[in-house]
Amino acid sequence: MGQLEGKTAIVTGSSRGIGADVAHLLAAEGAAVVINYRQKAPRANKVVSTIEAAGGRAVAVGADLTDATGAEALVSAAKEAFGGLDVLVLNASGGMEAAMGEGYALRLNRDAQVDLLKTAAEVMPAGSRVVFVTSHQAHFINTVETMPEYEAVARSKRAGEDALRELVPELEQKGISLVVVSGDMIEGTVTATLLDRANPGAIEARRAEAGRLYSVQEFAAEIVATVSADVPSGHTEYVGGAGTFLQ
Image (cartoon, rainbow, N blue to C red; front, top):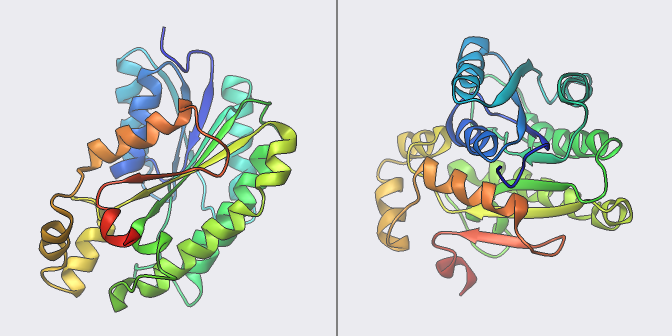
């Protein structure tokens, strides 16, 4: 019996990368998992198949979180497929993609996060947990400069974190806790690859400064650990290299 047996989780942006690994680990702990994707259904279905092959339960749901119907689609899927919702991992983020339009980063990294949390909180019982995934570069953007190529995204993610934290008192009245997981640049992620392409040597430079960078699998394990961690609502869990930002 895993720690999350009988629980249901939604993991946004979980058809690949960190989100997919988080989904696999949650399923291994016994949770039924809603896999969220925006466009790549085959990739999301592969995550579901892998979870099911290991004896877990999962369903893939296509939902653009910046669309008005996205949040309701995910929450409805959790209720219909598994009977409820106990864990919400807000992993999806973006803003460096080309051709997504002006203001996309803020719509995804702030507005969509708040909309999904408010929708989910309506059905989450007392004892539920929400985990917001961010980066040190975004979490500390008001005190530590980041690469120019990432600044707009970092500020939108910090705006999202701030907006979510404003909901903590309301969540606490419902018995729902919010935890923020802030990670350093993660090896192998789309964002790290795009940053290194825009600013050659960025990954190597950050690795040298931090000592080492976490892999996707390692960071996903840290995120999943916070789902059951005995920490207060509003807690920030720093994963890798935070010392250089906290000085």
